[in-house]
Amino acid sequence: MRNRESGLPMNWLLYWITRLAIAGVQALPLNLVAWLGRRCGGLACRLDARHRRVAHRNLTLIFGGEKSPAEIHALVRENFQRIGESFACGLKTAAMSDQALARRTEAVGVEHLRADDPSLGRNRVLAIGHFGNFEVYARVGRNQLPFRYATTYRALNVPGVNRAFQELRDRTGCLFFERRSEAGRLRRAMTEHPLMIGFLSDQHAGGKGLPLPFLGHIASTTSAPAVFAARYKCPLHAAVCYRTRPGHWRIEVSEAIPIETPAGPRPVEDVMRDVNRILEAAVRRDPANWFWVHRRWRPGVHRRPKPAATGLP
Image (cartoon, rainbow, N blue to C red; front, side):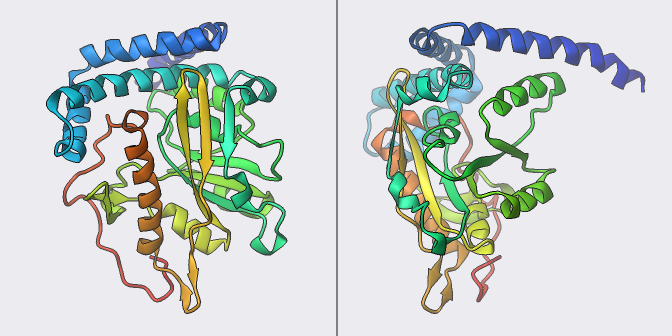
């Protein structure tokens, strides 16, 4: 009880420090926010040796055969700068109106969603990734589409900071579901709203993930997009956020990824291979735009796919 009580003032303090920091960023022009974010990212590259090594190891694994050590080093630095820019811009864009944000974003491939086709059902599933300012996925085109946007997230371990960021997320109008504790709430929402649910699909999925190739190497891959699309019988698409220049983004939506064959549901592994191929192409198109500071490839840390006639695990 004593430890719990002693943590309350600290959480309160961290909450207000975080809120004030966010408000300070949001008071600045977006171009300045992008510039400052890049500078902070460059500083982080110098100071954060652990994540710098992770990024260097990942980039060498994927591009070592085609890029020189100097090019890899430059990519690491640019990646840190892009991450800093994206994080800072995400704080700013959360407070921008849809009209103001529309002047900074464009959406391509929205017609693939076929939002006006009742035969496809009322929900859509998006496989998304940590590309560019991925917070804008939930904002682009929402006034033109009949869906309520939703996604999952993992709560931060510091309650005060987590509360401040959750309040920031709530301002976007998107529904957020904590992936470890709110699965039931998400399932109910799938039946209550016409949802466009986005699943981050490009990160290490742990011991329960599918062992599938990603950029030429086996990586533990989430099955969530394929499973949800099959379970709720709704179309599955992939979407990528490209940073076109500082403070400007382009969302590209893929055509529907088949989840059915004439013989029945496709295996989840096959569906997620298609997702991985789309995300791979996005990484190769603009390598600095992805989240290289994450340990994506961890040999042996995954599960073996189970053969299933229904295509579901």
